[in-house]
Image (cartoon, rainbow, N blue to C red; front, side):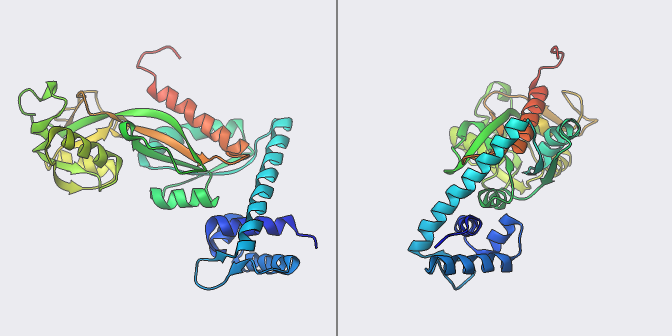
Length: 317
């Protein structure tokens, strides 16, 4: 009996993704090709490797054991590919990067032209999808890098097999309509009890800004009055400009307006103590050979761009 290592890799993909369709997506082949490779591996092994039925495939005990061998085969091949790339000092391939609006506009888009000029063999595909599906695709191997935002004070370690690289800390500002004023003494208050009684434009539960607002409310013993919920910062600022509430907005999400925008912009942005910052991170797989050399090149470009963004105004290049 001789097992085909390529079919072991297919079994490993089924184990990792939980189904034939998902494995086909991860391997960039058709579902029928995955099913055929699986059937041939079962004939080679003389064992049933999966329990068929339903959309999600369950592996038999024998399937679990062989899938682990397949995982190691995939890791060794990835490591060998990386060794060749290092020996030839080459980086090539398509890197799929999941990002979000403000990161795309301030970090990704400015970084990519120079990267692709320096590394023409690397193709970067940028997609914007919600965080949970993005992380599922990262674990399944269909995307390479996922940019996400976290409350810098509550940064939790990623799930096993994943790793975070911090790009930058983006401080939160309190944004309010141009003709609104805070209760007296608010500038000296970390807890902002008066501001928390105002109507708020906030992100949905679980979003980074909502987590910060909830934290400020807990610290002050006040439940913030959420008047409007929206995730995208241009929509948040539109509601603030309309005089419908105040909001927490990270500095990078503000449009190019004077540092202290007033009536012309329709809002004022105040840098107050205690608001904290969001942490913009890139999440990648942490197995052997991960991230790939091409993905590392993209990550290094993002780190360089983040350093430019964080550089104080007037600092020497």
